[in-house]
Length: 303
Ligand code: MG
Image (cartoon, rainbow, N blue to C red):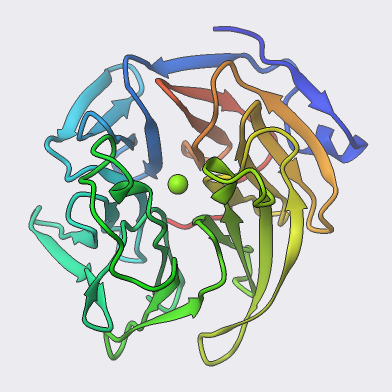
C-alpha cells in the first residue's frame, strides 16, 4: 500500500475521494494494462494486458490468474445488460461478445465492405446498442496487434443497432477516438480524443455529445482538456462527474467541466473502472500495473 497524492483543484473533489485512502498495486508485470471491467456476480475484475495477448482476472484474496490467452490483443471491455463480456480485439479487428457458455460471437468486424481499424473501447447502452471507437493503434505496429494499412477512410465511432444488427458511424471527425462513456442518465456521451499520442498538434480533449432519440449524436463540443498526457479510458460516477485517465494519474471533472482534482498514480494511466460490491472501488490500469483505491463516489456503469 502506498498513499497517493490527492491533488485538489476544487472543494467538490472532497465529495469524490477519501483523502486518507491508500492505493494498492493489485497486479504488475504487465506491458500495457487496459480494459478493466468488474464482475459483481463473480466478485472479480478482468483486464487486458494487450502486448502480452492476455486477459487477466483479479479476485480479492486470490490474486491474479489468466482468464484468456491468447486474447487476440484484447483492449477495452464492458458488459451488456445480460452481463455478457463485450471485448474490443485488435488482432481480429473486431468487437466480440462472450456468451454464458464461453463461446465467442462476433458483433462487428467490418463496415462498408472494409475491415475495421482496431476497435479500442466499448460501452453498451441500456437499450442494448453497442457503441465503440475504432482508432488505428492496433494496426500501427506489431506491438498491440498486427501492422496493417487502414481500410477505413476515417477513425469512426460506431453504433451497433440492437434490433437490426446494423453498424453505422455516429462520429467521424476524431483523429483517434479512444475511451467513451455515457452520463448516468445516458443523455450524454463523452468521447476521448487521444490523437496527441502521435501528433502533438491534436488537442488532448474529451468531447461531449447529446444522444438523440433516434440513436444518433449531436453537439460534440470540448468538455475538458487534459493538462498532462492525454485522455484514454473514461468513466462517469452516479453524480455525473467524469473520471479520466491521464499521464499523471486520474483526473476528475464535474458535469460543468471544471477540474475537481487528480489522483496521482505512479505510472501513466490508460483506463479505469469502478467496482466492488458498492461500486466505490476505483481500478486503475496504468502501464505495467493495476492499482486499486477506494473512493467516495459510486460508479455509474451497470452491471
Ligand atoms: Mg483505450
